[in-house]
Image (cartoon, rainbow, N blue to C red):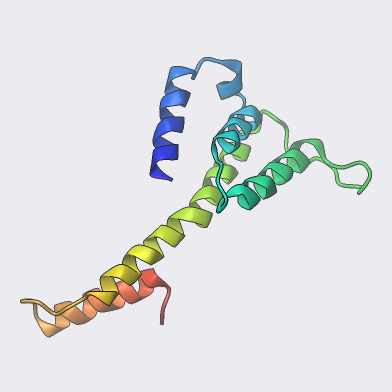
Length: 126
């Protein structure tokens, strides 16, 4: 995911004056188009459908649009959803790996406990 965010940031910087990048709807759509792979495809489809409904609604199902295509909140929501879906997972995996190999080392028992509890929280454990 880090590679995606770096590549998209560079693309955005290079093309920041283009109509695509100035419009939150098309910017979000473009970002979604860069995300491909077996572990992310369902999430991308879900986000794409949600984005479409936010701006276009669905007459057949009686769903009215809730956002305009130039609403910057579309981009903000996409960012929140992206980080919620993927950053938390990476953080939990990292914490789990640290816990699996955690030792007291040369620190005090209090330092050990505080750090251990912090790793437990990051891993999503009580």
